[in-house]
Length: 349
Ligand code: TTP
Ligand code: MG
Image (cartoon, rainbow, N blue to C red; front, side, top):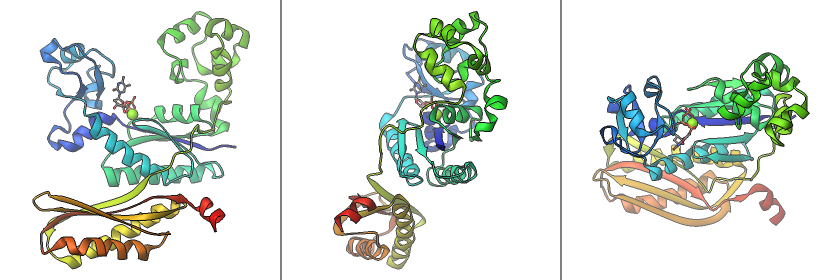
């Protein structure tokens, strides 16, 4: 049986903004078009959970959001910034399974088949903890035996949730839910189904497929199968991180080369752990240094294809030391890239 994990960041754009501007934490935050004091013409991209209490939600006209919650903090959408955060999260998550599939800027599937639901749950907790530790962001996770139900599981507990659905729980936990909990059934379809007495997923399961096809067209087949827990678990594309990196910002800027090198060792070990989890070999090692005046330097070097910690630390050291020159360092980072997977490596060998 397949074991699929689905992950969705909580109020993604808004949470990223709260991280950037800690002073807005705890306030209603709405990311989207300029409200222009109620005369703005665009829509809401997302709202944090405080703003949702006022009924504000994604795709709502920004003018309506302004009248619902005029005291909210309104911010424009910064796709570039969210994209960068998104890529780091995808990289991190892809270290937890050889098969990962991002499906939107804040959502992905991991194929954990071969593991038990209990093991998958433990991995889900680790993944949540890593994203919180490294990015300061919370997300929700769902685990089930196919993609559609994993996504549904995620939606059952949000924010910061983790929900596991096992096949034996289909009737007790999935069937009582209303049909519009299924991704793909919107308000209109739900209303059409209600006309034939179908309200819950259990009703859907028990309705003759002919009736469903009459009302939903061919997707009637799909949704009925889904209600019986039968749906696709194949991840549509193999996806792989292009690089793995770690950075550290010093509590106090330091001009001490020993401190910097020590930190590089720690960062390298963590980078290597992810590289090994992914089962890849790297051929480029890079470093990043940011000085107290925020000048930032990056350097990289091609090395012998390997999975070796020694190569990372010695290359990183040789790239960094000439750059230090007694200047005060604010941040240091280590990156490896140019991946070849272990499988390919074996064939080559
Ligand atoms: P979602 O995951 O749908 O929403 P969310 O992460 O904001 O909130 P939730 O906790 O319910 O998951 O979408 C991810 C991001 O995509 C969201 O932060 C903003 C953007 N988005 C839009 O720009 N317009 C939209 O209509 C939706 C639904 C999302
Ligand atoms: Mg989300």
